[in-house]
Image (cartoon, rainbow, N blue to C red; front, side):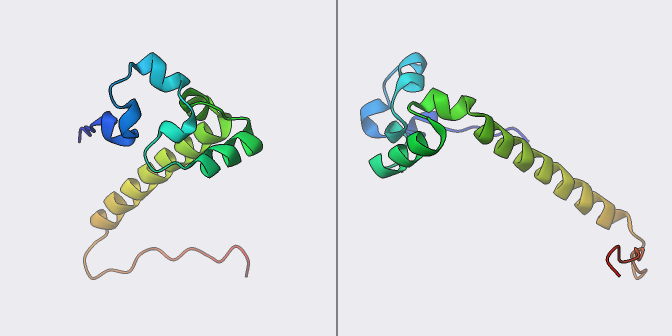
Length: 98
């Protein structure tokens, strides 16, 4: 399924007509919903000053990878559930802690 988004809606009004280059160099506060306090916290914690820094940050990218992997695992689990015989019990796995 293709996902489309109006990227301008992700930015404060002052930044919606700017070029991509300008948006990437913009302070994190240019993102819709990001306050100056949020931007300061990101700068202190991860030295993120601009929108582009946030997108390139290794922790942000790791979180995106985990999210994508989790969504794939959820889809695979849904597909597996759909292939189980109706009325039958799912395979029981031994408790690794017991």
